[in-house]
Image 1: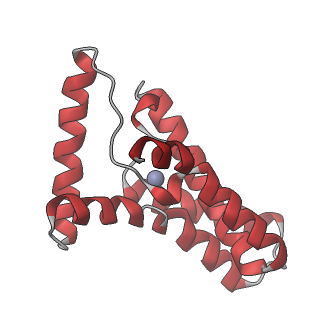
Image 2 (image 1 turned 90 degrees about the horizontal axis):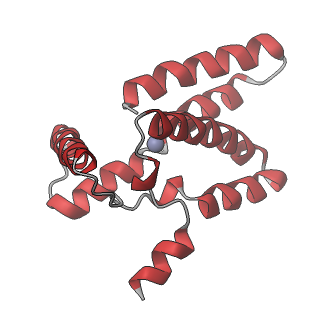
Image 3 (image 1 turned 180 degrees about the vertical axis):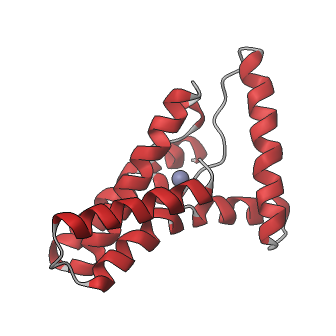
Amino acid sequence: MLPRTHIILGALLVILMWIINPQIHWYYLAITFIASFLIDFDHYAASVIKTGKISIPRSFEYHKNLGKAKEEERKKGIRTRGDFHLFHTVEFHALIGIIGIFFTPLFYVFIGMMFHSMLDVFSLLHRDVVYQREYFFFNWLRKRI
Ligand SMILES: [Zn+2]
Protein backbone atom coordinates (compact mmCIF):
# COMPACT_ATOMS: atom_id res chain seq x y z
CA MET A 1 0.00 0.00 0.00
CA LEU A 2 1.35 3.42 -0.95
CA PRO A 3 2.46 5.84 1.82
CA ARG A 4 -0.08 8.46 0.70
CA THR A 5 -2.92 5.95 1.17
CA HIS A 6 -1.61 5.19 4.68
CA ILE A 7 -1.39 8.93 5.44
CA ILE A 8 -4.99 9.56 4.29
CA LEU A 9 -6.42 6.54 6.14
CA GLY A 10 -4.28 7.33 9.23
CA ALA A 11 -5.80 10.84 9.27
CA LEU A 12 -9.29 9.33 9.02
CA LEU A 13 -8.45 6.98 11.93
CA VAL A 14 -7.42 9.81 14.27
CA ILE A 15 -10.45 11.90 13.23
CA LEU A 16 -12.64 8.92 14.12
CA MET A 17 -10.78 8.48 17.44
CA TRP A 18 -11.30 12.17 18.20
CA ILE A 19 -15.04 11.96 17.34
CA ILE A 20 -15.43 8.87 19.57
CA ASN A 21 -13.42 10.44 22.42
CA PRO A 22 -12.80 14.21 22.16
CA GLN A 23 -10.93 14.01 25.52
CA ILE A 24 -7.89 12.31 23.91
CA HIS A 25 -4.96 14.71 24.06
CA TRP A 26 -3.91 16.08 20.66
CA TYR A 27 -0.38 14.68 20.97
CA TYR A 28 -1.70 11.14 21.40
CA LEU A 29 -3.69 11.63 18.20
CA ALA A 30 -0.56 13.05 16.53
CA ILE A 31 1.48 10.03 17.71
CA THR A 32 -1.15 7.61 16.33
CA PHE A 33 -1.26 9.47 13.02
CA ILE A 34 2.54 9.56 12.62
CA ALA A 35 2.90 5.89 13.63
CA SER A 36 0.25 4.91 11.07
CA PHE A 37 2.65 5.69 8.22
CA LEU A 38 6.18 6.05 9.69
CA ILE A 39 6.22 2.28 10.33
CA ASP A 40 7.03 2.10 6.60
CA PHE A 41 10.46 3.55 7.39
CA ASP A 42 11.70 -0.06 7.27
CA HIS A 43 10.81 -0.14 3.54
CA TYR A 44 13.09 2.87 3.05
CA ALA A 45 15.81 1.20 5.16
CA ALA A 46 15.53 -1.96 3.03
CA SER A 47 16.01 0.05 -0.17
CA VAL A 48 19.03 1.88 1.29
CA ILE A 49 20.58 -1.47 2.26
CA LYS A 50 19.86 -3.01 -1.17
CA THR A 51 20.86 -0.04 -3.35
CA GLY A 52 23.32 1.86 -1.16
CA LYS A 53 21.44 5.08 -2.04
CA ILE A 54 19.81 7.29 0.61
CA SER A 55 17.64 9.22 -1.86
CA ILE A 56 13.91 8.98 -1.07
CA PRO A 57 12.83 9.26 -4.76
CA ARG A 58 15.29 6.39 -5.50
CA SER A 59 13.61 4.38 -2.74
CA PHE A 60 10.21 4.91 -4.37
CA GLU A 61 11.70 3.90 -7.72
CA TYR A 62 13.28 0.80 -6.14
CA HIS A 63 9.93 -0.28 -4.68
CA LYS A 64 8.09 0.44 -7.91
CA ASN A 65 10.54 -1.77 -9.84
CA LEU A 66 10.47 -4.44 -7.14
CA GLY A 67 6.67 -4.43 -7.28
CA LYS A 68 6.74 -4.93 -11.07
CA ALA A 69 9.28 -7.77 -10.78
CA LYS A 70 7.22 -9.46 -8.04
CA GLU A 71 4.06 -9.13 -10.12
CA GLU A 72 5.80 -10.79 -13.10
CA GLU A 73 6.89 -13.62 -10.78
CA ARG A 74 3.36 -14.00 -9.42
CA LYS A 75 1.93 -14.28 -12.96
CA LYS A 76 4.40 -17.12 -13.61
CA GLY A 77 3.34 -18.85 -10.39
CA ILE A 78 6.60 -18.04 -8.61
CA ARG A 79 5.92 -17.18 -4.98
CA THR A 80 8.89 -15.66 -3.17
CA ARG A 81 9.19 -13.34 -0.19
CA GLY A 82 10.09 -9.69 -0.63
CA ASP A 83 12.47 -7.66 1.52
CA PHE A 84 12.40 -8.13 5.28
CA HIS A 85 10.62 -5.33 7.16
CA LEU A 86 11.39 -5.40 10.90
CA PHE A 87 8.72 -2.90 11.99
CA HIS A 88 6.03 -5.00 10.29
CA THR A 89 6.76 -8.17 12.28
CA VAL A 90 4.46 -9.65 14.91
CA GLU A 91 7.31 -9.54 17.44
CA PHE A 92 7.91 -5.81 16.95
CA HIS A 93 4.17 -5.11 17.34
CA ALA A 94 4.12 -7.22 20.51
CA LEU A 95 7.16 -5.41 21.91
CA ILE A 96 5.64 -1.96 21.33
CA GLY A 97 2.27 -3.20 22.66
CA ILE A 98 3.84 -4.53 25.88
CA ILE A 99 5.88 -1.37 26.48
CA GLY A 100 2.70 0.60 25.68
CA ILE A 101 1.00 -0.95 28.72
CA PHE A 102 3.50 0.92 30.93
CA PHE A 103 4.32 3.94 28.73
CA THR A 104 1.19 5.57 27.29
CA PRO A 105 2.76 7.27 24.20
CA LEU A 106 3.84 3.85 22.91
CA PHE A 107 0.30 2.57 23.37
CA TYR A 108 -0.75 5.12 20.74
CA VAL A 109 2.21 4.14 18.53
CA PHE A 110 0.88 0.58 18.85
CA ILE A 111 -2.61 1.65 17.72
CA GLY A 112 -1.16 3.42 14.67
CA MET A 113 1.06 0.43 13.83
CA MET A 114 -1.78 -2.08 14.21
CA PHE A 115 -4.02 0.02 11.97
CA HIS A 116 -1.23 0.26 9.39
CA SER A 117 -0.50 -3.48 9.45
CA MET A 118 -4.19 -4.34 9.22
CA LEU A 119 -4.44 -2.20 6.05
CA ASP A 120 -1.26 -3.83 4.68
CA VAL A 121 -2.67 -7.33 5.23
CA PHE A 122 -5.99 -6.38 3.56
CA SER A 123 -4.02 -4.98 0.62
CA LEU A 124 -1.78 -8.08 0.38
CA LEU A 125 -4.84 -10.37 0.51
CA HIS A 126 -6.66 -8.28 -2.10
CA ARG A 127 -3.67 -8.50 -4.46
CA ASP A 128 -3.18 -12.23 -3.68
CA VAL A 129 0.43 -11.65 -2.54
CA VAL A 130 0.16 -12.36 1.17
CA TYR A 131 3.09 -14.83 0.84
CA GLN A 132 5.52 -12.01 -0.06
CA ARG A 133 5.92 -10.79 3.51
CA GLU A 134 7.83 -12.33 6.39
CA TYR A 135 5.57 -11.75 9.39
CA PHE A 136 7.84 -13.18 12.08
CA PHE A 137 11.22 -11.77 13.08
CA PHE A 138 12.38 -15.10 14.55
CA ASN A 139 11.45 -16.94 11.32
CA TRP A 140 13.57 -14.50 9.37
CA LEU A 141 16.42 -14.82 11.88
CA ARG A 142 16.25 -18.64 11.88
CA LYS A 143 16.60 -18.72 8.07
CA ARG A 144 19.69 -16.52 8.25
CA ILE A 145 21.55 -18.67 10.81
ZN1 LIG B 1 3.49 -1.13 5.63
